[in-house]
Image 1 (tube, one colour):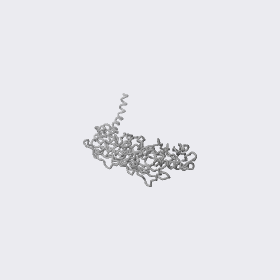
Image 2 (cartoon, one colour):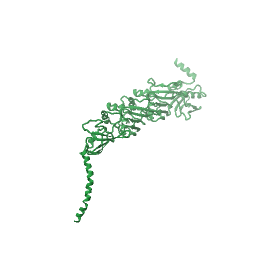
Image 3 (cartoon, one colour):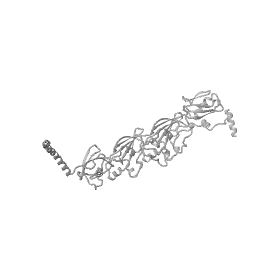
Image 4 (cartoon, one colour):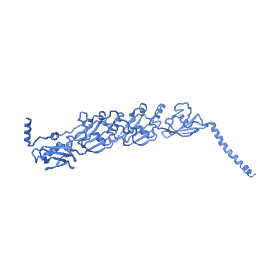
Length: 489
């Protein structure tokens, strides 16, 4: 019965039906895809993406190579390329406009034209070599713009592959709400929302959308930055390259505030289980490395309330608060946040620091190795000495050789340049048995001056010497004639 039905259908068409391929049937019979009226969320229930084959909803354009098969009419069949004006130049019927049409729509248009010459022509259109895809990328990527992405072996590129071509995403990106605007046939538009954070978390390639020609990608700006997520984002294969230097600024309580170019530091291993971590182990520029380049923190720096001000592609600024005290105390590496181009690190002035905290901060890697203190007066080795940061006064005196025999040992003068530009001076009693305290053994700061005065005996001796020296010179003058007379004796 089935054979008889097919034979009857064959007689009606006056064409054989043997040899129809699956793709031919799809190109002929597939209904057009209706444009979505609301954004579509890409979830794991969607078809697997990977590097998918060219879909039947592919929109034809200039540069596409296609094959046209007109059943039982070999002279009308063959390979063709869509011309720059979007047409095909076909035998007997000339130019046929196919730009903006799907494979099925193009087959219908060609069939309609050939129907003037043939009875019920059966036309199949298949794509041989797609043209390079024109993809637009905007938002939080390193190099936004328009990209021509080649299609190799009929394999369409995925979202993350195109993001890599655009230099990778920035740390200010919101990966949960990536939008892809896609043109459908007849000018309709479809909006797809892709959650690339789930791709990082699960490694499920179904979250990595396959792109089509004309897609426009928008990477939105995150409202807040999570310290927990930053290192995982940086380990993703579609994150910005670590090999590029970045320009940052460091201001506030550091010894050399200003702009710096960072080229990365110690390699950091990506988080375990993070998919796409092909760049994990590349060089990362972090907050502590930037502070080190700026000469290290000053003794009164408030490392609990450091701020990172990060510019975004929308012109706004993200503010990220970090606490480097947690890094020192508990080894919380999340606080040593990864930097990106244009970041400004602001280190504020602390209201109060306990001696215990000062000692802990002085031993941190982002503190300077030494500070400079000028010790003048009655010490064995006066001059500028270099001592570790947060060195107390007693230790600096000993580093300068200690008091000499002329020194006033009970107190010294401490001269200090304050952060507001004023200069203060005070007398500090000296007791080498004292521990660190603000009254008798304060912690010194960079460029402090210690003045060690003379003892009373030394001062009296110097005064007498000053008074008697002119008298000695006077008596020498009075004795001059006698010496001269003696010469002539």
